[in-house]
Each structure stands twice: as C-alpha cells, then as structure tokens.
Length: 259
Image 1 (cartoon, rainbow, N blue to C red):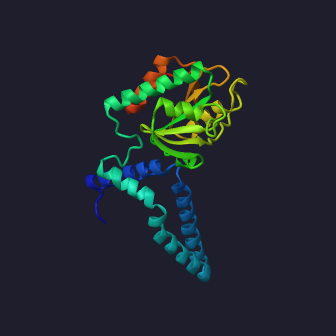
Image 2: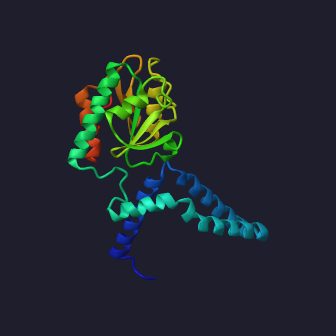
Image 3: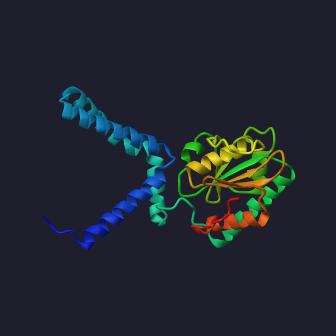
C-alpha cells in the first residue's frame, strides 16, 4: 500500500476546498433540489441492487443516466455564467469585482436612496447577495437586471406600484430582481412593532450570508439584518461603513455591530 505523502494531503485539501466553494455557489439555487434528487436516485439504485430487485435497479439506472445526460441542458445558463466567471478569475466569488469608484458610486446611491425613503416613510426591503446564492428567491420575483440607481429603487418601492411590497435583490451593482418573496424568521421574541419586512429580512439573513436593509413604512427607521442579528435605527455613517466593508470583502465588516 503506497505511503500517504504531503502531495496526497495537498491534493485532498484542494479538492475539498473546490467542493466546498461549489456547494456555496449552488446553495440557495434550484441546483440544490436537483442534486438532492440525484442523491436519492443513487441511494435507491444501490439499495435495490443489494436487495436483488433487478427490475427496479434497471429502471433507476436508466433514469439516472437520462438525468445525467440532461443536466448540461437544464443548467446551460448556469454553466455559461460559470465559464464566464472562470475566464475572469471570478468562479468562486458571488460578489462582482467592482472597482473602487464603482463601489463608492454604488454606496452613495444606496445611502441617498435610503435617506429619501426614510424621509418619506416609504417602506423598503433590499437584499445584498454575497457568497450564498439567492436564486430561489430571485425566481419568486420579477427579473430586472438593471443598474442600481436612486430613480429605479424609488420607483420600485413607490406605494401602490406592483413591486413595492416585495424585496429587491442586488447582486454586485445590479438590481437582479424586484417583488421577491422572502421566508419569515421563526423567532418569536421580537418586538411587536416589527412588521413583515423586518421578519422577512431576518428570515433570509438567517438562511444565507446576505446583508438585508429595511426601511420602516411606519417610522422611517433604517435597519440592517445579518445572520441572526437585527440592528435598528441605523445612522447614515453606520450604513455607509457596513456597505463599504461588504464590497471590500472584509470578513469582519459587521463585527460587534448587533445591538
């Protein structure tokens, strides 16, 4: 039996890291459900072979083959995007590689928009996608794929417009979708003053690494949700710092922020 060398350990570490990053990329997308289905097919196939159920094993084997052949067709858009990202050196990053000026312009736009929404007491829910994919929630809304601008966001959240009650999901510096439905948090020990927007913000933040911005329709108060924490009555400078840290990929950009 060959000896376990340093090269073997490095090989395992690299493969493990690649698999981990791929799992992060597909988490929250439709690929998750399909991979679960494939796993069930493989397990059922193995069990039927061990149990001697030849007919069932043959059917499952054929079905698995058909599914594997069809996967490139089903995931054609995702594969194309992955290849494009690979060519740009971005395969393992969800965040767009924005330049410093782009980041500053984006943050100025978000801060200015939030200021106007807060002043007019216009309710808003904005989700900033990071490493964990939010495709499942994007598909529940209306695709926009437009540049982030104050005018666009104000129009989306204007009362009585078709998309104002849902969430906006931002990927990089693009409004990917609007009118999106988000899961509500299971937390029960929340103030009764927090409405559906805040509960939805916590819900998606708990299930991903997204940063979620909420503007209260009743009070105009600005809040940020991250993980299991919700920070309320956010000052403009705090919001600017949080966004800057996120787009600079700072791993501790919200350390000690919850209160």
